[in-house]
Amino acid sequence: MAKKILLVDDAAFMRMMLKDTLTKNGYTDLYEAVDGADAVEKFSEVQPDLVIMDITMPNKDGLEALKEIRAKDGSANIVMCSAMGQESMVMEAVRSGAKDFIVKPFKADRVLKTVNNILGGA
Image 1 (spheres, rainbow, N blue to C red):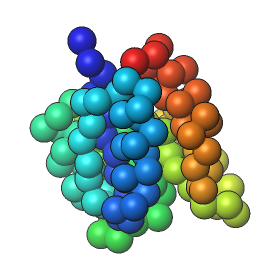
Image 2: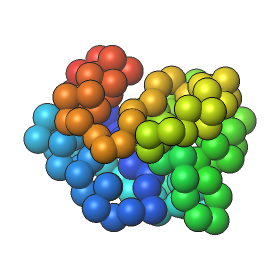
Image 3: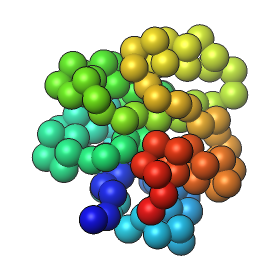
Image 4: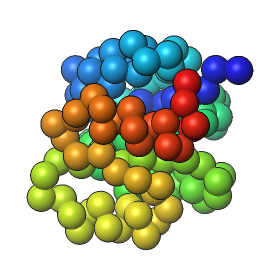
């Protein structure tokens, strides 16, 4: 059974880059959300195996969305994406239940290593 992955970023090109990397490596059941509010809604609809979510977004940031999703599903696998220099936000995300984090700009091998560690391969 294909693993469902929800990609959450307000920048379309970041979602495209992630999608591209994941698709090339066998992850094809991908969903997208454009901000934290959208992410919380899509999480309930799709019930993904993994969420890869940006920290800094409009409407509802990644930390708020992380907390809401974890409140609904304590076993949710969420990986946060952050720009360089957001260490304090990353630490808060980890304390709030994020499984891991990826620093932007993405390196394909780092993204895959993180996804494979959590999902056990495509």
